[in-house]
Image (cartoon, rainbow, N blue to C red; front, side, top):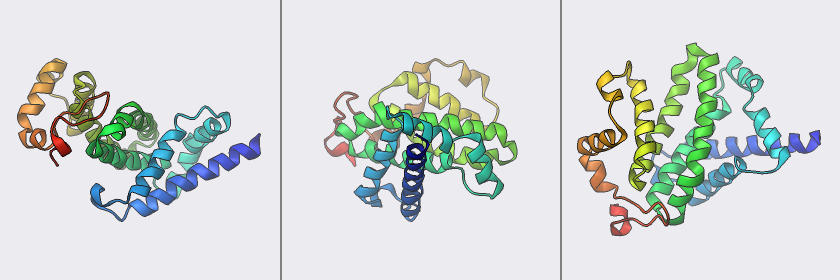
Length: 215
């Protein structure tokens, strides 16, 4: 039903815009009220909905035609706004640990990866504005890398690290040829302070190796 799809469209857009407007005032993730993270979790759930009307609404929201409308009036595309919200949720869930961290690994990251693909398409269609869009993409990528490090997922950590390297210009051939294991150990060696402050967490229960997550 077109009317139901239109309502789902309006509800989702309103949710994105409302949370984005309220969250923009907080520089530090730890200062953001819990209720805002709950709203972003609701937004993540939308990407896993089995409802046909919700699926159709998502297609409309992130369609090329809607992106064109936003770009024409110099507004930030909704995919960019949403990936930033997801990025902040990833950081929050990684800090909290427990079920939140497990949900982050199994759901939040996947929603972010879908949004990342949508942002890539915007870059392809608007090459002159691609750097602005990539700034949003890079933020999510950074937090995804740290989450994979925290749970010990070497394969996905190395995969995302290789992508991140592309943001710094032409890839160093020697680094490209490194195995996942080599990238993993090299990064940990180069970032000892981060390792001390962010201990490993169980990928199944989200419990930190060190009480309180070393925070």
